[in-house]
Image 1 (spheres, rainbow, N blue to C red):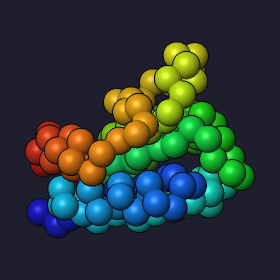
Image 2: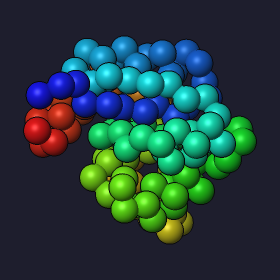
Image 3: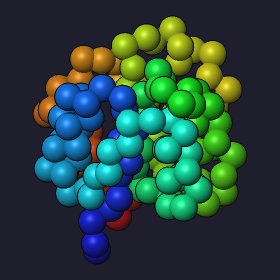
Image 4: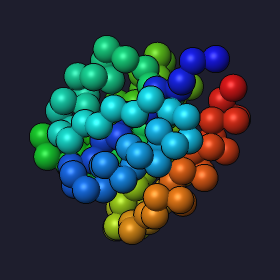
Length: 122
């Protein structure tokens, strides 16, 4: 099976790079998107297997992106990991992510979790 596609929707460049390397080490083909509006456009074109989503984004809020993802039938199989430093924001989400990771998130934590998710997807 070819590499699974992962979108990293995160505006902190250093974190996005760490997430990208973690997902690559887990066998995913990562794509980093730094802006919520650009992420919305990419999600309209491509259905990634995994989405790592920050809730605080420029352009379009991560909460709004989660609603878009969950309301799009093409993205129904996409797993969503919300990565946030603000756990309180996840409590009132209208749609639930598959997982919530609280920042700071280590390279090995995301890599190991991604490997387990990848096995479930194949």
